[in-house]
Structures are given as C-alpha cells and as structure tokens.
Image (cartoon, rainbow, N blue to C red; front, side, top):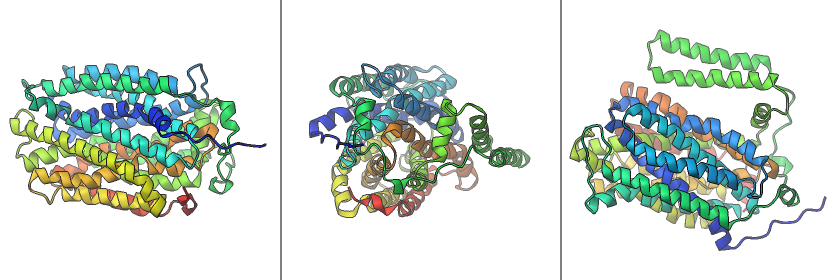
Amino acid sequence: MSRTAKPTLSFWQIWNMCFGFLGIQFGFALQNANASRIFETLGAPMDAVPGLWIAAPLTGLLVQPIIGYLSDRTWTRWGRRRPYFMIGAVFTTLALLVMPNSPTLWIAAGTLWVLDASINISMEPFRAFVGDKLSPRQRPTGYAMQSFFIGVGAIIASFLPFILAHFGVANTAAAGEVPPTVRYAFYFGAAVLLASIAWTVFSTREYSPQELAGFDDAEPPAAQQSAPLTGPPAWSRIGAWIALGVALAMAIAWRDGDKMLYVLAGLCAAYGLLLGVARVVPGRHMLAVIVDDLRAMPRTMRRLAWVQFFSWFALFAMWIYTTAAVAGTHFGSSDPATAAYNEGANWVGVLFGAYNGFAALAALLIPVMVRWMGLRWSHLVNLWLGGLGLISLMLIDDPRWLLLSMVGVGFAWASILSLPYALLSDSVPAAKMGIYMGLFNFFIVIPQLVAAAALGFTLRVWLGGEPMHVLVLGGVSLFIAGLCVLRVPAHQEVV
C-alpha cells in the first residue's frame, strides 16, 4: 500500500494545537502548589498529606488508559480527541471553583479526585494529538511546544497567590479557612483553562482514521516492536501477583506498619486481579484489549518505564513536601495558621512559578539540544540538572537564592514533559496512539502512588521527620532516572 508523508505544519498551526495545554497546566499548577496548603489548613497532619494526595495518581491510573482506548475509537463531527478536551475542561473548571471553598478536609480530598480525573480526561488525548497531527520529524517540536505552554501557564498560576497578596488581597484567614489569595487564584485559573482549551478545539482540525492510516508513519519500524503475545496471561503469573499483594499486606499488619503501605500491597494484588479478569472476558472487551496492549508494549516503552518511574517519584516528592520544607527550614514555621508559614507557602508558589518559567525557556532550547546530542543524552543532562537543583535546596540558606535551584528543576521538568513522549511516539502504531499514551502514563502514576504510600512512613522512620530530606531523596531519584535513559534503544537518536 502506497503511503504519503504527513503535511509539515506551520509554527502557528503547532501553536494552536498545543495552546490548550496552557489551561491544563493552570489547573495542575494550582493543584500542585496549593493542595498541601489547603489540606493542612483544613487540619491534615503532615504525615497524612501524602495519603490525601493519593487521589491524583490513582485517578490517572484508572482514567488515562480508558480515555486513550475510547479516543482511539471515537469519531464525531468534532474529531476523535477534541470532544474529550472539552468534556474534561468543563468538569475541571467546576472542580477548580469548588476546591478552595471546601468546608471540610474530606470534601477537599474528594474534590481533588474530581479535579485530577477531569484534567486527565483532557490531557491524555492532548499527548496523542501531537502523534496524530505531526510527522516524526516535527514531534519533538510539538512536545516542546506543549512544554512551553506548560511552563507559561504554571508561571502565572503558581505566582497568583503571591501577586494577589502584593496587591492587598488577604493572605491569611480564620483557622480552617483557605486564604482569599488562594481562592481567587483558583477562580482565575478556571476561566483560563476553559478558554484556552476551547481555543484549541475551535482552531484545529483532526485527521480522520482513514487519513491517518494512509500516512507513512501509521506503523512503527518493526525493530521497535516486542515479540508477539503467546496467549492470555498465565494463571501462575496471575496467582503470583495476588499472592505477593496478600503477603505484603500480612507483613505490614504483622509489623503494625504504616497503613499507607497497604497501597503497595493493593497495587500488586490489583494487577493480578486485572490479569485474571482480562483472561476470562471476551477478547474484544475493552479490558482485555488494554491488558493485551500493555503486555505487548514496544521495547522502547518498557525501557522508558524505568526512566519515568524515577522521574515522577522525584516530582511527586517535590510537590508534596516543598511547602513544608521551605516554610520550616527557610521561614521558621510549620504552623499553617502563622504569617511566617503562609509567607513561606507563597514563596513556594514563586519557586514553582520560577521552575516553570525556566522550563518554558528550556523548551525553546530542547530542540537544539536534541539536534546536537540526540534525544537520550539531552534527557539525561536535563534530569541530572534537576537532581542537582533539588539537592541544592538543602544547601542554600537565603530563600531568595532558591530561585537558582529552580533553574535545574525547570530544565528537568521541560524535558520530562517532552522527550519521553518524542521517544515513545515513533515506536507505536498510529491506530493505537491514544491507548499507548494512556498506558505510558501508568509509569507516571505508579511512582506517584508509591510515593504517596511510602513517603510519609519514610519521612517519619528514616528521614528524621525533616521534609527537606525528602527533596534530597528526590534529587537522587532524578540521577537514577538519567542513568536509565541510556538503556533506551539508540536508534531513536535521529530526529
């Protein structure tokens, strides 16, 4: 069958198709910079905060492969990916309006579930959208453009409470109430998210499934494929995963361990149950298809899984504990009701905005780095810069100089959001771009679940109760992620 190359898109066409990520990152940045603050304000003890954050990765684990599967099989007058953009945008907007007004801790935790699920409904198809629209040669640019908008959106969103306080909006409130600076930031973010995603929906068209099948990148090179499956999951493997989960749960109970560690046992047992259900349902059932695609993932994806695991473990540690670490170490307070704590929390918003600003600049440099060093070495260098940035937070006394640490974190963030997807997208078939992008996000959410389950216990038992030590652990994790990049197949270097 004769195939044609995908048309080369102009700068502004790529701009329009990625613009919605500005709003998606507004939602993520407000969540990342303020969720711990909201939880602590509503009475959550510090070692319970990771458990409340478990909503974010768990919803991604459930939602993203399902949305990827469905969007691969959707075709409407609005296309296959764009309907999901808008559905997610509407529900995310509503969650952003509710979360800072949560009267109790359990309502805030529940709203985080809705918020993260809704963001994932929009975000996952956006990743596949780049693979649909751009040729392999332009995909690094497309993902770098997404990183640029992520950086810009997160700068503004992270700075908003600090900016509002500067203009006289109250930055403290009565005990158990979220400060007005945070509430108004969430309202503004809701408006930006809805408007930016609508811009992409109405300014960009999609290729039909028939058009996609006719392009020369419809099937990846054979060398990148895994061996074909030999049959359904073996009962021995299914039983082994369930037994491992039960054994871990029994060990935790016997040692009277941290209850959050049961999440790790549950993950093992749940994977075994998933394999078991996939074995008995019809072969065309959505669950069976998802499991088969997971088991038959390309070799590139298997190698990238380890890179993603250590990268996102570090990021989740940073998002959970930077507020407590900086407020306690650099501003001298761990009490959310004090002015010093809230000043430190606002400064963390500035730091998060700064690393996203540096990420926006790094996104402009990454295509140049890739042409010079290749995808793998560019990603390794950026991850190691991020590791140095996180570790340096412990070594700097003046909080103003923490902005220098954010340079490295920004380069790592921009790289994590672009280069793994560029490495992956060339190795999966176009007809399954959505499902594989969704499955790839397993290796984002699983490390976050591990972090949510284990970091509270690790902080209390092994790290002396010092949140800053968790950030150092995150820096070491980024160094390991960089080494894992070298295991990714080298034939991906040509871009």
